[in-house]
Every structure is written in structure tokens, then in C-alpha cells.
Length: 132
Image (cartoon, rainbow, N blue to C red; front, side, top):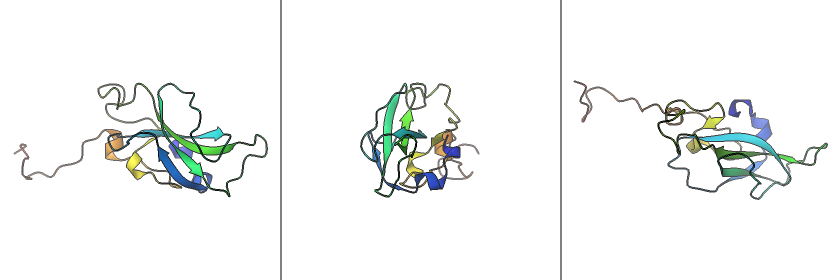
């Protein structure tokens, strides 16, 4: 879950690679996966699709026990809002979801009104406001 990812777990990231345009995605799910390399597209074994992944710099050390690297991956499931706008996540978002516009290498990202499916607040009296 994104709330369980700490800054020290991702401080060796040097870049994020997006496999698709995320500008129209309200959220992506993020997790730390154990992967055999610092860079390159990881294998993906979840339902849904891999949307992006982090690349690690040369100072990132593998686990002594497994020899793997903990890298962030970004993904979506078939029932997420982009594929099913009126479904389970019409409003709200999964615990591990963050707004992709808040993500950069080495930062966790965060939830926003957009990722939560909440319309942006409007001020009364604005042009086009029919609530009067």
C-alpha cells in the first residue's frame, strides 16, 4: 500500500517509466515489488495491467537474502475507474492508489480530489454556476 511505502525505501529511484499516457488516469495503484534488476520492464503477474515502474540508480543495493531489488510498480485492475467509471471506485480509490500527477522518482505521491473521484469544488456565483 502506498501509505506503507516510506521515503527511505524509494530514495534510490532515478526515474519513472510510464508504459502508457497517465494524464487521463485519475489514479494508479503503487506497490513495492521484489525484482531481479535495478532497471528494465518488470514481469507482471497480477490481473489488469502494468502502467509504469521505477528505475533504480547504481547505489541501490539488493537484498542480502534474495538478491532482489525493491522497486515501485504502478498498475491498474480490471475493475478500476478507468475501465469501469460507474463501478466500485466511481468515487473513492483503493488504499494503494495515488494521483499519477503527484508522482516523481523518490516521492510517494498522494491522493487528491481527482484520485478520490471527488469533483473539484466550485465557488457560488461563478459564471456558469446555475445553483442560484
